[in-house]
Length: 363
Image (cartoon, rainbow, N blue to C red):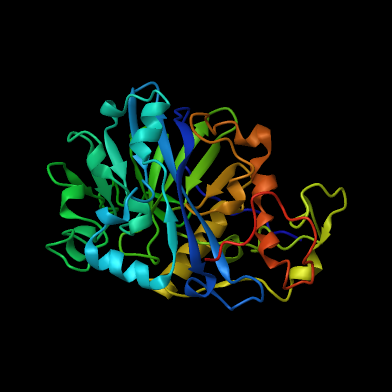
């Protein structure tokens, strides 16, 4: 039986923002699952890596920002040492458009976007901030200026270029700079970005130095929220099951056959879950951030959207549509166990009809 969800103590507010989930069109193939997830599970050799970002719009204040930017369009624009290292992995990259192009095509006033937020400094999140106006600030997490900046070539190990942020304000978050120093959402340190309870930035270290998440209040009447996860997790098996969402005895929608009217037995997956975390900046710290995230995920009025969550691709509405009505559309339930579709071979379900959007993401 599931435990009662823990209190998140999100301050009460009637202020909301509009959130659109952006399919950046960027994707990566040939990423070995063993680089990020352990233990190794037969048949789960590759991670599906779409790249998601978010547009946050505060209608009342007429302010907007973007959370993450996905990949650069051209590998030639990466720092040469990074390009050489990625070439050796055998991974392939496809990026038809950058985020600025996508937003412009969707008739967003991109000249008025006040800030781009990097969940962290890795190349599949930093994108092309230089395509935005010089007045658009770049927001980064704690410790970034000391340990991550400058970009290449001043820092030969950087995953981004100095030209990516040249001429614009780089604003580093300090989670101790709250009115009383104690603002927390669940167990995450938090900053109230607009000052009215509509959008918070959360301190979620571990995967990378300065890693942060976003939490947007998208309805006031239902008090529902979208959590922008960055790389807090790379696969649903790192996040679930947990005390508040244990593996159910029957799973619907069926993770291997979305058209099936018969639920999938949950006991098939008991030997496989939970997954652990492998290559990250600080694994113990990341595991602690995942535990904090599980407490948020316990709530059915919160849609958790990690940046590379394949489960979202066949369920949610992407920009230019808004995601504010996710509760009415049942997205939390529909996406919760889709990741189990990766384990078809491990449980002997090969050859059956796969869930739409899932599949082999190898070279």
